[in-house]
Image 1 (tube, helix red, strand yellow):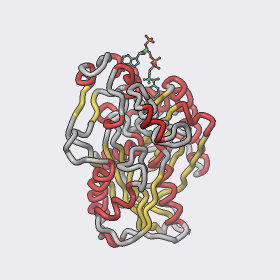
Image 2 (spheres, helix red, strand yellow):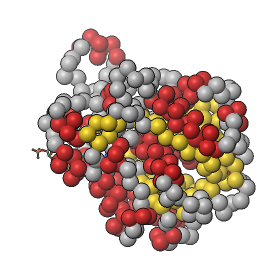
Image 3 (cartoon, helix red, strand yellow):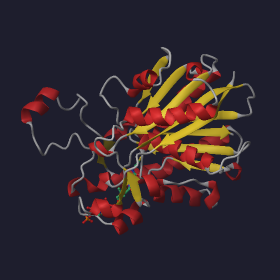
Image 4 (spheres, rainbow, N blue to C red):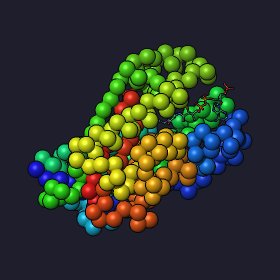
Length: 336
Ligand code: COA
């Protein structure tokens, strides 16, 4: 068995900055409410006509990650793409990346695990490498939320939270089993599937022909729904559990964590975890203040920034943890 290790990271966020004050011109909200409840000051929203999509942003992040990895695109054996906001309902964006980057006809897998998407994607890639099936895998998390949000007062409890962007990582085979990704831990609890959900264009509840026939301007099934307080309460429990699960699996104590990168769901959730584990400010990385919650892109964007800022060094124990719609949650323990 091999390990996998991350040898290249990249991110891309659209130029267009949308502040909380900008939102207050679209809906009944204000900077104080948003910052107090979520920590978010601004987010990036793709400007119409810019050409940015989930797939193209993923490609931009991937190009940087591949260059930093120092490998050729033809060395990539497999692509894993995590998103909840694909350009098309099908096919998923993995194949768009294969085409746009001119990568040979390798497999491209789409992961649909929302805020846990990047953790699930890393786990898949890690296990393909561990078994020796592939050597180099490109893993992407990318989201274009802004085109699908209800930007009226009706949707304010959801739309102020989410932002657009992409992050990518290149994983390669590591022969030293004490380095790289040590373990990944994945969970789900489908009982709560509809507590954070986008009903359409799924076909389980509404048939496309009925939607078209009704042509109802008040149909909210195309906008995300979130039971915010329920999500919050579950998130703090599951984040804590799955971080501990990863540490215990590797015989590590909490004080071994050099850098915790939580999915950027809400600053208050991250602060709760930090306090619970008694971690210092320099042991937890947050950038939700600048980008909002970018779902599957949040961990790779944060990981890339932490690495660019020199906050992750060789030999560090890095912990990634996520929770989100499904519910799904997971963690990754890395010896950098
Ligand atoms: N601006 C101003 N007021 C808003 C608002 C907004 N953007 N959104 C909601 N409100 C109002 C509500 O209408 C409600 O008003 P009322 O008391 O008159 O009915 C009030 O603020 C409180 O709403 P509530 O939903 O109870 O707020 P909250 O304290 O639970 O905060 C969230 C809402 C969404 C910020 C919070 O529940 C949360 O962060 N949940 C976790 C979400 C998350 O992490 N999601 C990602 C998971 S991956």
